[in-house]
Amino acid sequence: MRAPRLGLFILIIFLVGLGLAALGVVGRLRRGSGQVTRLTVSLLRPLIAWPAGVPHALLELHSLQAERDQLATELVRLSVENTALKEKNVTMAAQAAAASVQFSDPVVFRLGARVVGREPDPLIQELKLDRGSADGIKVGQAVLTAGVIVARIRDVLPHESTALVLGSHLSVLQVRHETSRQTALVRGDVAGLELQSFPLETTLNSGDRIVTSGLDGIVPGGILVGTVDRVLSNQSSFLQTAKLNQAISARQVELVEVVGR
Image (cartoon, rainbow, N blue to C red):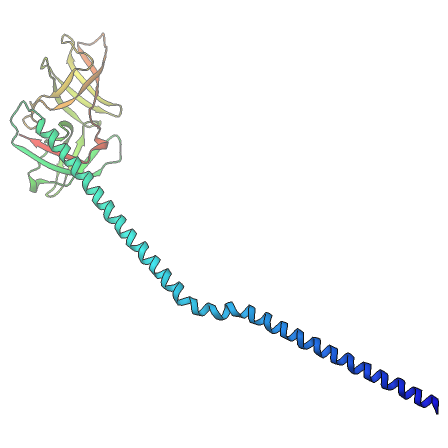
């Protein structure tokens, strides 16, 4: 009798231990599930809150874009205003220089023009002006900037004209020595202006001023062409040649004055 009772007692103890172990597992699972729930909520909270902040972020982004567009518009306005002021300064300087020019011949035609195009070929060197025959422009008239001749009108259309720069190899201009009044020719070259056919018996020094002669009946006399840079000696000739310095380069010209007789 004792053996069956002992086995039953052992079985009861085993079942009680198994039940207590099961209860412990369940408790741990319950506590773990609570931790999982809290972790899940903490992860989902930003995702839940994000849609609520989207409208504010979009409004702020739209405000920044509007501010950027406003600044861009203001920058364009200031750029246009700055360009207009520069052009006004150039115009006033050209007008002041033109007013101070003393022509030795009467001038019957004076007209301001703007350079709107340039010939890229360095041998040809042409300027396109925004004035033409409808404005009184004629072939042969002088193109001045700051009182210095830089080109002559070559072709004329009703509302535009083309001027041949003095530095072009196609250009030939009648000139004279300002002091001695000895006449000569100025030809264009890729290296600059060259004074030619100047009599050897007439003194020619560096720094002497060469001006237009006025003998062609179109270009007034007395307009500055350039100054003598250096005299080129030639023992076998009765004529002198010299390199000239131009006070103004045609590449820098934006506003000009067309003059003629």
